[in-house]
Image 1 (tube, rainbow, N blue to C red):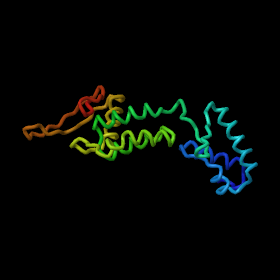
Image 2 (cartoon, rainbow, N blue to C red):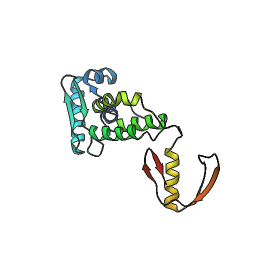
Image 3 (tube, helix red, strand yellow):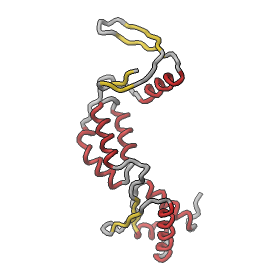
Image 4 (tube, helix red, strand yellow):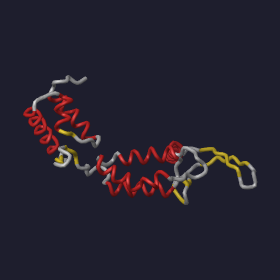
Length: 185
């Protein structure tokens, strides 16, 4: 639990907001945390030194009168996020729910400014995403098959042939890969 007037708590809250990709405006900080400008500058100076020690770059945007963090090298760049989003869109492998959840998580890999830029680039395609007809959740199934491969477990599944005949199979999967809009094992 944070103490409202504790310097460390304020720094940690600012760090949390910046890590979420939010902007920190001086006026907003002054109002919400109720402290003097000179104290704010001292805390920001402390925070900038903290960021520099972590080899991350904090930038001040004069037009917004706000500070923000540049994307971490460990995170995806906006270009990489865009490329991965395009792969998800074009693959059509996932149902709407899983597709949107994955896109949202990918977009959170960028700071807010970059995320908005990528969102605009994929907006229309995301809105008009067409999933394959199966409509099933796949992520958990893919994981189950992958762990079955790793553990060398037998799996059972049923399917219906084109002539309407139903078949049940027991197999020991050896791998899983993606081909022609679907995952195959």
